[in-house]
Length: 212
Image (cartoon, one colour):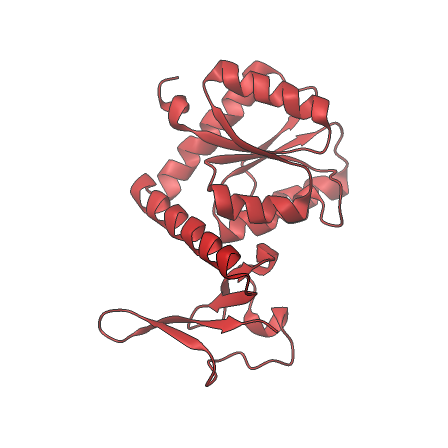
């Protein structure tokens, strides 16, 4: 488990006992816990801030956003693999979980061997799909962007040239959505007051708009 020592896990769980059990098992496996979060809304923001290697996500959470919706937002915006923790799962929830592209799910109470297998499969799959150096740089930029936006205390949205939201502060749950769908009625292309993001050749990479 030498590689696991460098791996960081975000726990999203509103039951303190379950969170403690998961953290203890992770410690035995050599993984580090970067944060324990109780709500789906905070999980989306926390994933952008902490850039975890894996997210352990309870399905039933405190707050308006459940674990399935939070997982979908995290996968689309941050790219971190999500493993669900659940006491029971019916057909409707199974269908919603499958649609998120989650890396797996574990029945509660969490068992060491189940968690170990799911973590290793999730990380191996991510390494295969997205090279680690690229992930690390992207995670660093996301963390820096979140820190700057928080320090400025200014709501903003970053949009790519195709009109898709790359980042939004303070609520990043809309990342991955089309700007026109996330903000209906507002111009979905750069305006005079927006800030363009260009590469060294002057090609437009995206644009930033301060939210009202």
